[in-house]
Amino acid sequence: MSRLGQLLKQQILSINVGYLRKWLLIGGLIGIVAGLGSIAFFSAITWATRLFLGMGAGFTPPAPVGEGETVVTEIARRWMIPLITTLGGLISGLIVYKLAPEAEGHGTDAAIEAFHHKEGLIRARVPLVKLVASAITIGSGGSAGREGPTAQIAAGFGSLLGRLLKLSVQDRRIAMAAGIGAGIGAIFKAPLGGALLSTEILYLEGFEVAALVPSFIASIIGYTIFSSWVGYTPIFGGHYQVMFDDPYSLIYYAGLGLICGLIGILYPRCFYFTRNFFRSLQIPDYFKPAIGGLGVGILGFFLPQVLGMGYGWLQIVMEPQVAIPVGLMVVLVFAKIVATSLSIGSGGSGGVFAPGLFIGGMVGAALWSGLHGVLPHVPPTPEPFVVVGMMALFGGVAHAPLAVMLMVGEMAGSYTMLAPAMIAVGISYVVVGRNTIYESQVQSPAESPCHRYEYLQPLLAHLKVRDAMRTDVVPVRSDERVGDIESRVASDRIKSLPVIDSQSGELVGIISREDLLRNGMANGRLVRDIMTTNVVTTTTEDSLDTVMQLLSQYDVSSLPVLGKSGSSSKLVGMISRQDVIRVYTKAAKGLLEKDKEDDRRAG
Image 1 (spheres, rainbow, N blue to C red):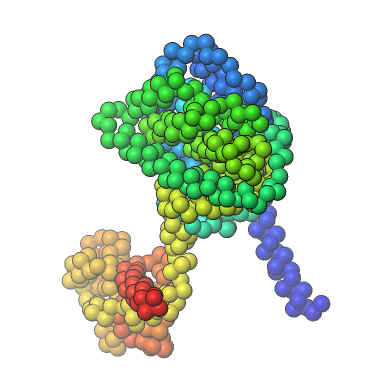
Image 2 (image 1 turned 45 degrees about the vertical axis):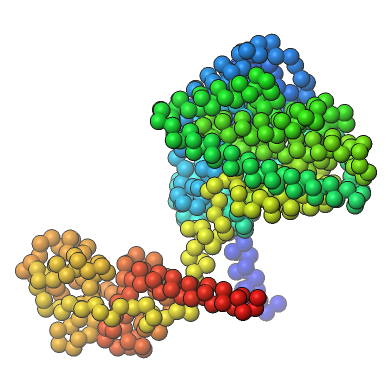
């Protein structure tokens, strides 16, 4: 190998090693917190359920195979259920709104918002508040899931770690996204799906590719720690062995996807309608979850299946002999939507993933019960329809079809139904359209504040400074008195003015409001005495991409523009961020109109 080749190889290896070293450390720490946080949250839910539903109502909800006993018990004090859910809502509301109001609702959406709009910043107290409040909400019978709290715990630590290590804003965002994947991957014992979810769930369309490797690292460590404590058995057990071997059945899975897509429109609309209704109520915020809890308790009095996460009931309808009548399963689909909207939309704390799986699983079980024994090519057991229903409903409504398919496959202990799942999830995703359970998702990476400049760059590179600069700026002479030009600097929208030599007319400096403030009321001094002489400039032939880089690098609001060659110091104009944005917007609209005209002609 040549000397040049060896140098190139060493450089590539040094880059990869540096990247891996950084994210192995950061991702590893996030994974440890995700695993320990999942253990703490799982234990908190268990104790809260025993305290509220167990001791209060004498009711223990059935658990899935991987987390306990799938046993349906009698409810000793059914009349206590509305009181317990109301009390749980009140306690949760007091904790959230007195300590960290941003912890209300489903935490995954709050983490998504922090990624896009808050530079990856989450207050340190939020994860702890979220853990306690969500455990009380779920343990007292609230219809909520556990992905939101664990996502916010690990994402919050990723945000904190980013601040402690003084990471860049972009790396802090990636650390926070890795926390989302690690928390979800750990608590659901689905490390691959959880890691992928953290990259897919941020957008309606698209992936955050940069978060993939950090999420892999954090998720597998979180999963290993949590599973070492609770066991490695998938949530719904490893018994699911039904294989897809009948292509004629695909028509039924397509129908399942269509139904899940239609219900996937109803779920977020009902949720956010309820959320907006509670926000409009003119009562203290901490009372609202109690009202929502009362509504859930009344539903739970008649339909105890809607209480809590509901994974045990999904395990029951997966069995060959479905123990729930088809009519009741249909009712439970809509009752769970209402119960979740009341529990979380009222300001309670919890996730929306588990309710989404419950709704989709019940749709699948109900459809199977209606078709089995009536039409040919229907699978002999309901498990395939239940599993694919879970994937189709939440994969569509979360706009994360690939990640949810993998997660549910890991939770069910098998990927054997991925082929029909692709049909069902694809149809559901298309039918759901822009409806989403995560309102903080943005359309695509191009629409996110953290990537907007990257997508502006190609167009900015083709636009020149001469297209955007202002030529109407009247420069200041270096021998003018400061008192004579103060009003001009203070009122000019560029916030700074170029200074030219009194004799040659060449640019010699720039004077800004900061210069005036730094030198106080220096009315008797000359401009050349206080002006900034180390001036960053551009030329008429530079690209607007170059201008934006200079403005950002030197943290200035505007740049003087020199002649074409730049060898002369003759000033020809000024350019600011606002000028760049104005010209870019005009050019982008022109391209959009041209595309529309081309489409019209082609049509």
